[in-house]
Image (cartoon, rainbow, N blue to C red; front, side, top):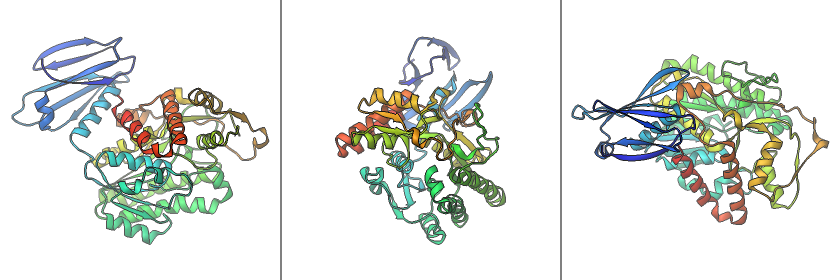
Length: 449
């Protein structure tokens, strides 16, 4: 059988797959292989006219997924029985071929921040027309300027999420289909120092955003990004699930839990009747190139290396769910796509955390970082231990996203650390390399199985 072959990485536990083509069944053993070959007719891919059914095993049950639209004059059908990871990869490939994201109008709040800049970069690569709404960057250097994010935008608006009238005007003028709300006061220690701004930004900022969405007829879906810290942390060693109690000891965590309640209230009171799908996304501790926020581990490490100093670490024994920013952004967009597809069951909250193996202590993370970044030196800062309350253990259970969205993190903790160290080392050596290393890492991520 002749066809176009696409190599896709698969998990080690995938043992075989079955292909049925026009009634002929073949089996290809893949126990020791690094990849599985997808077989498709080139003319079918070129025209986008084919019918494809995927099947995979999840907790012993068989689920089905259909990609593409069948045409009456096309008889070729491919049937797959394959793992959830490979099925998700195939869905990504099909979304790209069908141009799902191309030319869509999307508004991103918080686009000048670390995660926001990576979000705009990915959306731009997918062909979206993006409007950004956020305060101007507040660090120097910053990823927004290094990547010239303003050049990727259809509209760049420097304004405060607390300015409800300005926000409503920009949303209505931009006419987005999708809003990704990432604007926030994101720092735990700043929350202690200025609780009023933290609560006003994270809670009333979310209210302002949802009010603006209500006023704009073009909006079909909203993804509100919160945090893994929105759960009441009781010290449990089990991962927090979406059904667990919301809460928070410090102002930042509590304000994010409150914003989750705002989302749920608006969803049930207003949006469910208007046909607008609203969901919340809770990511883990995100790392990656381009973060220069204060009181964050990797940015503090980058500054220490640049200054030839030893990094002072407050809580080396604290455990966190570390993940690369691209995995988090990918999770948000996976959820957004389901909402734009009209899947009402997905209008709820989802965790997007890393694999359990990425849930390690600060000390363990720094040991891995040092292997990729030998210039790093660190020591425990015992003088600051216990000064402010910070949870000792935090872990997200993301099985719901895996089960319902077919989302899985693509990069392991080692790949995450390597990419992060590579980015900072390259940009510290040559700040002009920021765009090229970011693009290279984005392409590596998008091509990953």
